[in-house]
Amino acid sequence: MHLKRQKVPKRWPIPRKGTAYVVKPNFGLKNGIPILVVLRDLLKIAQNRKEVKKALYAKNVLLNDVPIKSEKNSAFLFDIITLVPSKKSYRLIFNEHGKFQAEEVKEAEAHSKIFKIINKKTLKGKKTQLNLKDGKNFISDIKCAVNDSVIFDFKKGNITKCLPLKEKSNAFVFAGNHSGSMGNINKIDLERKMIELKTKDKTLNILIKQMIILE
Image: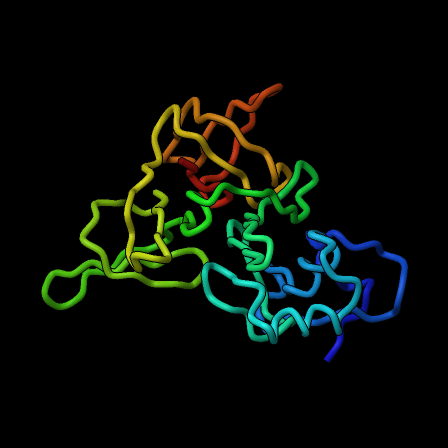
């Protein structure tokens, strides 16, 4: 299945004019971006689908430390793309226009990802399940609240740190009119479920559900 170019999400950094159809992801059309688009249009390490499929078949591309099986698989905000031959890793972020962008990260940052907690559940045995924005769930005894962030270590297979929602915390906006903005939290208004975010050049009022706490 393909996707009409005119219906491609605005977050994808591809021109509106060109071939009539583009790759349709297996999942995550609204919030993700296909690996094919990442490798061809963002990182520009492949010219076409054939080259991407060849690299994936050789297990030369990892997504969060796991080999990618299909060029249609989606990557999401803060996912880590690793190119095995060059030993380079990139984190997916949004630029100031709200479009996906890849930034190179150091080896020390290439094996972990920040997730936002959107819900918590208490299971049998008083164990706590953290439900994360990307749809993943983890059982952890780390003390965290809804709207905090956690750092998950792919090598260790567990959550290593909690990043609380509090004043002066660094936050990133992933939705809404100010998507791609980043700054420090001045104030938190729990009644209105908003924060006041101070960026480099202005102060913004952002819904808590539209931002994520960074380290």
